[in-house]
Image (cartoon, rainbow, N blue to C red; front, side, top):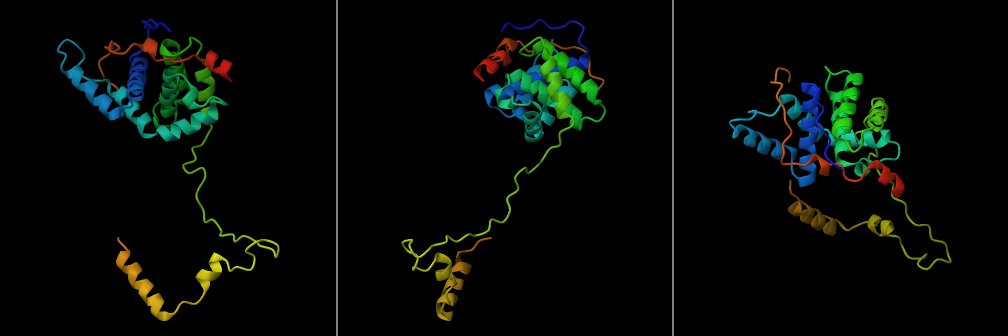
Length: 233
């Protein structure tokens, strides 16, 4: 897919959201930590005397926030996407959704309708399709879904002994539990206790000047389109 032309009327904050998506995509595509990508980009920008001398603070906030809450965001997006897992989405699309959902859940000064509208702008500019309705639908449903930190808590699993009848081989043999429950001589128990003891051990105000890095071709961001995913299904 060819790189889309940058929209000339995008606000500064919209472009900062796009920069956050770009940072997250780079980290994902390189299997690198987001913090490492942020440091590298900041160093490059500081070394360029003719360019902007720092990353937009709000873009940094969004990238770090998404990284910190990745499990939460992906769990909710998986539920809200109704059959489209986050892993199957085009790379840019899933990071657009992550940024939008992070704003909905963790940025108090951004209203939910604003966060959804901004995510749609970003998706229509650099996403895998010009139609942002997918982003709109997923984020609209996601706002009503709660995060379950431990969806399947591990409880005490009861011990169940096999039931043997008279015709089952080994029915007359004592069970493991029966053997372990037999009385142990005091001398042997004291020796076992000795061995066990011995073996134990204890944003705003940033200059409105923005350009995408040319090191990354946004045209490579998109992967397969959702249409091709539907064909696979």
